[in-house]
Image (cartoon, rainbow, N blue to C red; front, side):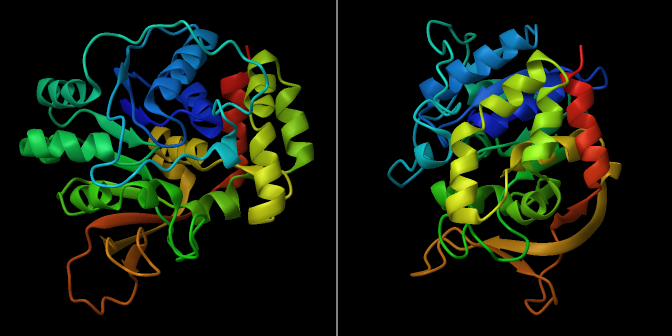
Length: 305
């Protein structure tokens, strides 16, 4: 597995899921600008790797979208991306090698074997495809926390953050022919929200559980005031759960999906052709729902010593 992430509070939980699961062989963590600047995302990934007692390489990647200005999510995850709870998030060095080159090299060395999990904007993946178009056919699966299956956005009325930050990159990836699986924000809202009681139960499991809950402090406020969720939802962890165990997805539709890059009101929208009205062949497996109990079970298992 390769994990491409813009490491903030929910990304960190997704990293815990992967790094603590014996079934998962993570070959690299690549970092992209998104929730936080790429340098901050690298520090957050390195800190989480350390907590998980892992030595998986962490590589810095793209520090800006392809064409647009930076958009960060400090209001969602805090200035440091990890809830602003005072964690020591500095002084660690990433592993050598640019994320884009690492993605290309691993794909070519292990054709048909790797699952690529994307948890942030798709800038690194688009740049890798531009540099090495052949890698589109070299991944076994590409599981993305990207977009929304129901058209409800969290940045604009129609756009989810990861697509909105770099819609041109998303357009390249969605048109690439890669074996795409999309886990949208709608899945997180519906099936991966933790109530205060759920969060307390996870925190009681042990230090990793406490970490996974404590870093959501800013996210809890965002969910309360903006998305009207009691507690917090975990889009990146539920995406990782689908990557680790595809059977956790209980409804998946095969659809054509395109990315809006120029709309006055809809830039960054994932346009899902549910009725086949475009006549275009389905090219994305769109996850609609997951088994919530099994997802919660994965969280607890990952955080238990």
